[in-house]
Image (cartoon, rainbow, N blue to C red; front, side, top):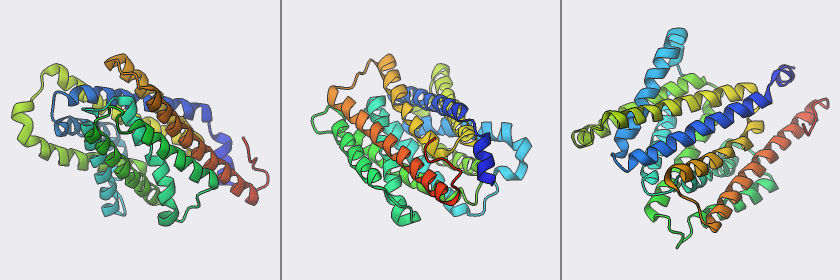
Length: 309
């Protein structure tokens, strides 16, 4: 009956709005990162982002949560998750130096499809026929975006594919750890680990890369936007089920493409746009299929739960 009460108290429209705002924050942070990555070494940019994340968590949540801010039961897995996100942040900064924002983000959205495929052998989850079809179309979309002769830098594409791979590990570890760890504690360990790694990597490059005040402000803004985005996502999943919100994540592609055009004047070619649409469509189809399957499974246990909302 607890699930029934949570469902009756959920506010899906608010959850959707929060996800839309979160993806806007992420897309804005990626756009600023692309600008900064052309001027400064990636470790410096990412170090400032993580330091802001740590400061905001400690200042705003530390006094209220105390030791609960960092208490975890499976520390090594939590740190492995944080390492995955650190590699993802670094490879994205390197990729955005040479790739348009829209295409880079579209390729990264291969990750949810990889999570679905790997969840079958690792977590014992079942993949439906629609899931397999969606995976095929998603991979086809990435091939259209990153096709030979498509004017995308091969090294940048490689960095984004590495990003998608480690993001997949990050999401799988998140699923495993969400059963025993709090979201805030995982976020805190991710933040301090990333800050430590990139502060060390930044030390040899600081004398030649110390930016002016304006660019320091942009780096601080990137860290603030990323932290706000993560908090908005956390709030969204308290308002509506994850399966209901998953398709909304693909608004990120619209924000990324729009900001890439607005700031850098980049417009993807026809095949790249088709590839982006295939990736988004495949991801939405997989998310909706998963949601409907979960509703059917619940309906088999409680016939009062409708299959289609």
